[in-house]
Each structure stands twice: as C-alpha cells, then as structure tokens.
Length: 291
Image (tube, rainbow, N blue to C red; front, side):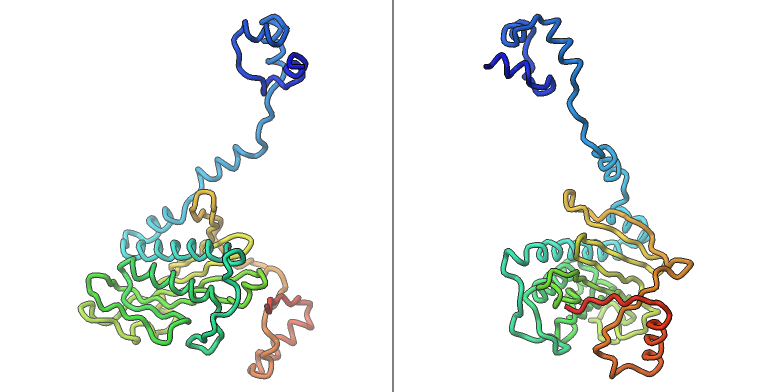
C-alpha cells in the first residue's frame, strides 16, 4: 500500500528523499524517479504575483500624507491620527455583532438623536486619537454637548477639528454602510491662549482639510487638502490604507441618480421640490438607504 500511494502521489507532494531511499521506497531506480519528478509541477497560485506587486508598489496613506503636506509636520501628525481613528473604528464595527455592540445606549446626543453603543465607542476613539496627537486645540463632536478645548499648552497645536465619529449609526444594526466625517480649521486666536469656539465657527472656504471614512464591504478613506480629492482603501492584511485613485466628477455628469430623504419633503424650499420633481421627470433613478 505504501508503494502504491507513493507512486500515485504527485511528484511535487512527495517527500524529498535521497536517491537510495527514493529507489527503495518508491520501487524505482533513481534515474526513473528523477524523470518522474520533472514531468509533474506544483500548480502556481493564480494572480498572487500581481496582488503582491500591487501591494509593494502602492502608495500608502502615510507616504501620501508626508509627501502632500509639503513639510507641515503638524498637519501630517493630525492626518495620521485621523487614519488611526478610522482603523480602530473599522475594527470595532466589524466585531459589533459578536461583541453585543448593536442597539441603543439609552442616552441622547447634542442634537437630540438616540445614541447607539457604537456611537459612544467611536466618539471615544476619535477624541482620544485627536487629543493624543498633540496638534489639536479644539474638538467639536456631534456626540458632545460642548466643544472640547485642550488647555494644556504642551499638548495642543494649531488645529480645530469638527467631526461626526459615526455618521449613519442607525444603519449599523441593519449591516449597512456607515462612516466618519471630519473637517479641519487652523486657529486664528493667539497660540499662547486656549482656543475659543470662534476659531471653528467659520465659513467652509477657510477649511484647510476635510474627508470621510466609509465602513462597508471595504473600509475607505477619502481626503482633501483643497487641491484634489484622493481615495484610499484599507488593506486589513497589512493594516495600511492604500491609494486607489484621485476622484473627479465625470465630464458627462455620470449616472443619472438623485438621492434624498423624501420623508422631509414638507420642510423643503420650493426650488428643491421643483428640482427633485424635474429629476423624476427626466429619467433619474432614486438611490437612498433609510435604515
């Protein structure tokens, strides 16, 4: 039986034995054994080489931040803190079902919405990451009643960050995509004093960076510094966001899709109502997730 099994086994799977042992166990002369092994080859992994090349050649978000912030070390530290918060949030969301993180936390946030368990976790992650990076002076979160002002002059910097740590958290229980959104302003008040809300209550034109992270079939992070919008996808196996593309509006307008919550139709201004009506009459399709 051993002799039969060895002969029928593919050459690539046979143990590497010396010529004498090979001839004795396999029942063949060493020369015959060598000929048999050269006639059969182990199957090569399909696409593995391309996948490995893509990973080695891809631009990571960390590299992009260092290169694109044009020597602004503080901004690089901030964006690294943002990507770290997104990675930790993605991990928590992925484990939500098995760790009993679905459902409400029996509290309401600053805007009166019911808070989910994951809202609290995501908020803690974002606040801790931004505080510890040492370059923020003021944080505004949807989950906090008041802005978080960092008073320790040795642990603060020039940036004010507004964020929703888990936007669309009502979708989590339905296993639908959720995300984090953020915007960054550079303070205007003197650096030797604590920041004030006036440092962040400013027009969007004064925003120096913004972006969002989406947690769904893949975890993606989209960021801009005001000169182009760049998309990155998280490769969980190596723990890095890898560059995907620079995002641009299609020249032809793209797909004819409109998205809105028509449950709020009664509170819309008349021009918005007319626009949505026009979309319906000109072949647009509606896409909206109302979980």
